[in-house]
Length: 501
Image (cartoon, rainbow, N blue to C red; front, top):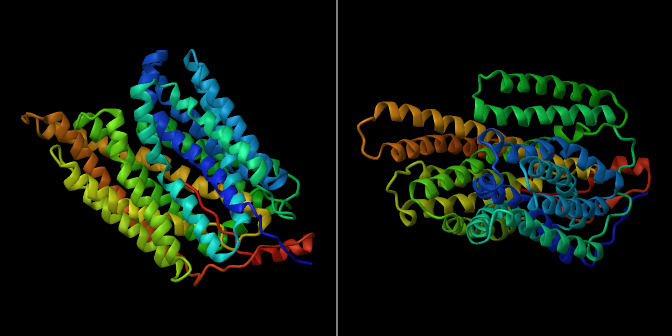
């Protein structure tokens, strides 16, 4: 028998702490990126090991996301949410006091492990907490703003902390955020009764999915530094293909799969996952190249460079909370998602005109504002669709798929666009040897060319949304949660949207 779940009376307070946890996970990546040169100098990290400060986190986080989502469904989302927060804080403290390369790399890997527990738990908590249409739109708008803008907030914090304190604060900053979120979650966050998935854990699926995703992320990481034809990335991609193919075969046969394929085969969720992943390619390219441009070409300090991204944060928040949140219950979601990503592509198109002497106010600022409006709008809609109609017992793994889409998309974007920029820069240097400002001209030409690829990625994300998504409206109403196996089969009638960075 299906029962109507009573809404959590503290759900809006809970949203604050869920969003705070998501902010910590998202900004951590860009904070560390900004602080990495100072950390390398302070700990004497070799150039060969430098990339592992980023890669150690990416491999642990990307590889364990599905497992983390399944554990949240099994053990309770609130419990795993709090464990993830406290573990992330401890790992950050360990990294902040690191005295050598190995200690810092170990801390980054631990951050990835606890982040893989925390992120799906946060997203699935949002999914099962807000189920009424109007409230859901507002909640997702708030969470989407945090998720979309968190990377840019990390750039600001990273620049300020590195310039005025030291690189260690890029790790320490996570501790108060995590502790505040955990303390608030104890009182305000609650699990939904009957929404756990108590099926036996699919160990073969866990092993195949984890190793397959690790191999995939590692392949893109090595492709960035070694080239796409090097034996390591090619071998990693081949291993990933075999392992993930084996994972799909296992999921088709086991009684209780780690990732029920019903989560992926519904066309609206498929459109949301693919759109998010492809859009992430373009967004990661923007952060990467604009940071290089403003610091290396314009000569701006890390703090000023971080503040230069502030208008984009504001426009992302406006696009998510004002444009998308108002439109989602009035027009078909595919228009909100598709046109949002196409507007973002227009903003990226403006940035393809970048030159050495381009004005920040005349070119960079308008491009970032248009891009932010489009990304905030498109991401909010995509993330709302990403668990549309999913069964409550699958909310954790469905949420993990959002993270995986963006993690893989970001890895592809970083490796692919870096490769494009580097090759174009090299060719430019060979063809324009007589230029007086050769190095900067070549670098900016490489950035601008790679940005064209980002335009294509965002445009493709928009087209996929307009093509695949066909739901007319996102349904409202509370989540119907059953108390037995038979009820679970009907629980998919509940609409449980969620979103993330």
